Image 1: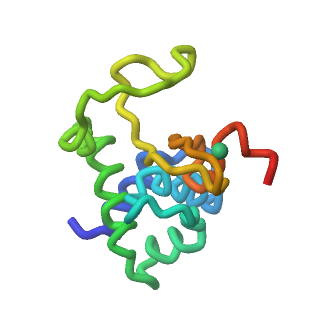
Image 2 (image 1 turned 180 degrees about the horizontal axis):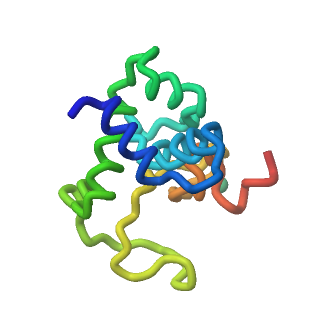
Length: 139
Ligand SMILES: [Zn+2]
């Protein structure tokens, strides 16, 4: 199946009654941005916009390789076969047990804090997060 058809299926699968198309595209952009594979621990990640998702949905823009991969990953997860498990290994992490359950599959990507003097590596709560919790408000 081509990427556009897969995206159409994903949008139908995650559709809520009464939800506007724009909100549906925004939610899909957020979900797919989470699955974005970053080259070289890139710190300048941008969230995909709802207009980009809409344009791919309508076929007016060809999806980037990164978006194709994210769409296929999300489709596999909704299918019940988490594609990300193929690369998953049990590793040591530091997490708040009230928020992260043991055995959880982490889909985010580790980043180094954007503060030059900070040595912390973290998984941001949003894909475009740049700073660790300590430096978040001290930009
Ligand atoms: Zn930091």
